[in-house]
Length: 433
Image 1 (spheres, rainbow, N blue to C red):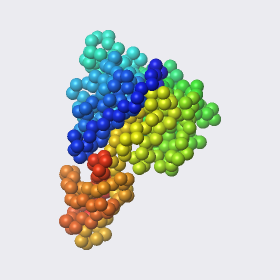
Image 2 (cartoon, one colour; image 1 turned 30 degrees about the vertical axis):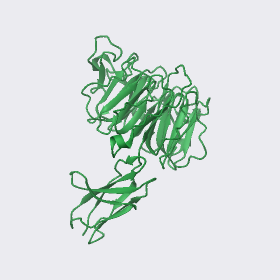
Image 3 (cartoon, rainbow, N blue to C red; image 1 turned 135 degrees about the vertical axis):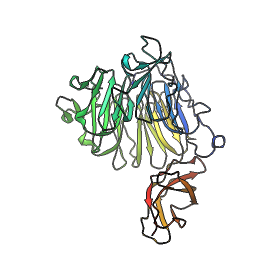
């Protein structure tokens, strides 16, 4: 991501108390560089599902699906389009912000001087000739990319995975961070990385990009001056230039920083490569159970399976000083020089319901969750709403009220005194004879 003048600032913790918001609280916490208020979550923010950090702005997805942004707004990057509606995901670049609507349509706003939002034919609102969203303009990527499953933002480019798994990108492309010339498709300035095959996640760095393929291998492309894409022997020489990081092995998540990248391997360890000026690639050896990483301009974050956050690398603004008051977290993110987390209770995992094994009950069990005080068990029939049917303190429950022969969908939420109620666990079908 782009470099800014960095000032030493105190740690800022944005916290809305559980007492004020009630159960279901997932509070956004920020620390590090805060000159533009990017670490100071709005007092009325409420519970959130996801947070993302950009250059000096932050964007969050509320539990309701509404999008809210705060921080530097010089290019309109915090001017969330009116009537955007409920969304599935958000992302932030240096001075632009993006979201996917529930229907899969990508909407982008903020600085568009390098077409990182979209072309003139995709612009909605604002004044003619605007290259930003100061006057309310935004770009809707409907005809150019169609419905998408996930998005990411680099410093000055944007990426998405279409519902068929194919990666597309647009914006600043001087280093091929969107794609090579043969991959430029259609009239909308879109690069299509079809050569990668199906992918499940994308990440954007300063001038490079990364994707997690459906087989667990990581592909990278763009600027490689610090080795952030990979070594020469892993570069795929074809009409679609990219690196395939076979030496890393099977991974479950990838993130891209300024000139380095992080990945979570299948065994929960973290691997890093690229620029290491501030030790951002010196992964602590104590990390063996990671579930997510996040990369800032020159610092790294890891979220462990017990909800603990670890940080290392550049710390000029306190971005690597994880607050001592930070509770269990469910998601992390990084801006250029600040760090972010959603504080909440981790959901239960690996829920399984018995399938006709018993004549008097449905047996539901799951893995114990860290810091759990209580488990709330829910049941639904068909496409109906989930009903709370019981509470327990151990990770298993016997549903003796199930009607024989009826197929139910079960899920669990976890409660802890510190962080309120978690999001729902995975679900499973179960029935009694």
